[in-house]
Length: 172
Image 1 (tube, rainbow, N blue to C red):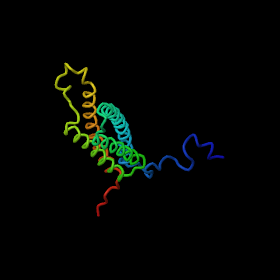
Image 2: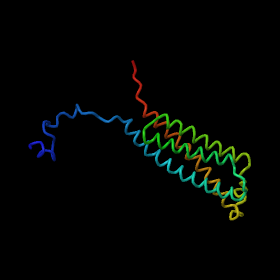
Image 3: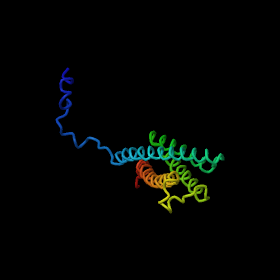
Image 4: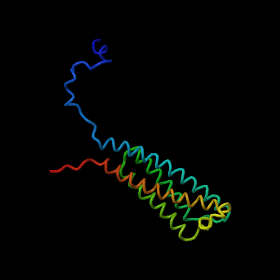
């Protein structure tokens, strides 16, 4: 009964002088928590960008009637990488996070190859007076640019996160 009454105040059996013997949370665990939170927002933003790309791909495919294989493979790889990234973030698995980093970079590379092959025409950027007719292409250009920027931040966050998740090296 005496222990229940003192639950609101100081725990029974201590006078407060044992603070030097209490454990302190290592700063790398705090960095991991912040990194996971940052990675969550980056993955969420990447999902939105991927969904915008799927909508653009659907509109483009409906006009051409032939599916763009590189764009489809980029979208599939992108969504697979986001799944791996979220799984690695939730379960603190460095191997999944590394796979996410590689797969999402590959998806972005496939998108760049698709653009370089001329499957997209970005004439609306050069002449902004004609932007009304080329607004879909302008939005796709912005999406690709934002996707590349997010990828840079995601790679930086994953490298930091994996470095803080691995146990510290012991010097002998």
